[in-house]
Image 1 (cartoon, rainbow, N blue to C red):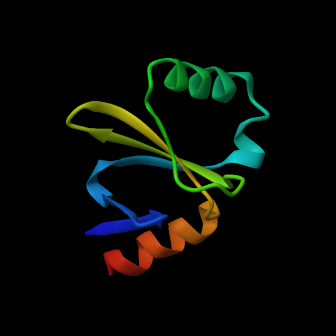
Image 2: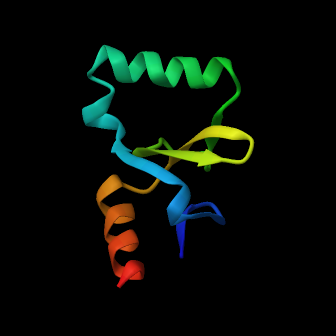
Image 3: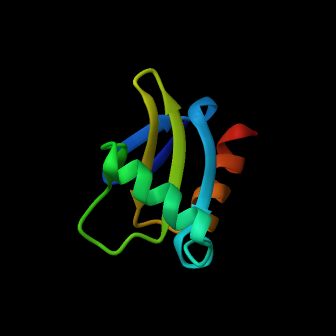
Amino acid sequence: MYLHLGADTVVRQSEIIGIFDLDTTTVSKHSRDFLGSAQKRGGIVSLGEDLPKSFIVTRARSGQLVYLSPLSAATLAKRAIAFSK
């Protein structure tokens, strides 16, 4: 199954490591360091011009990718659950 992340981007659900809310997770220094490291290695994909509400960590053939999505983590989680049934 696939999950639509926004901006015409879909990923296989089996490749998703986690879906995180940007407002709550970026309070932690560890999360900020993780996102900074991903940005330095070119592993961040921004999905649109809008302010991102969530980030999705995936494992791909080329390595780990982090998608910044304008959709909320709750919306993405509901989609993932609805499609997995």
